[in-house]
Amino acid sequence: QVQLVESGGGLVQAGDSLRLSCAASGRTFSSQSVGWFRQPPGKEREFVAAISWRSGNTNSADSVKGRFTISRDNAKSTVYLQMNSLKPEDTAVYYCAASGTSSWNPARMLLEYAYWGQGTQVTVTS
Image (cartoon, rainbow, N blue to C red):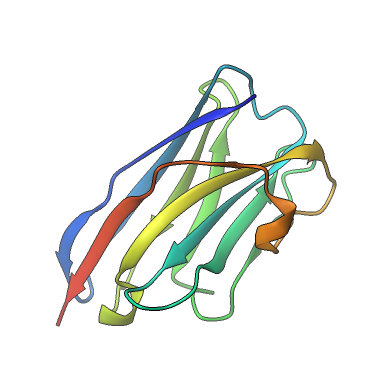
């Protein structure tokens, strides 16, 4: 069992930056995929970025490429999502998730993730 705790959300203006953190407790990320998803108001949850703890390989959605970067700190069992050049359309609840299974390439699909955090709100004003 992996418990995930997200932090770092907030209210910012367009063009600003935020860094989200996802800390694991109870069990380390080991060789799992760890991903960030978001759910905008009134819309379905969507993939943002993911990293394989095993390989360090990363993957991200086209909508955030060049603006968002996912990274990890092995010693702290923490995954970060650095979000730059934020846009109003980035407004959403952001969720961290862990796949629970070993993978070389990071998973992109919701159904591939077994453990979820409680979410953190990111609001970007124009």
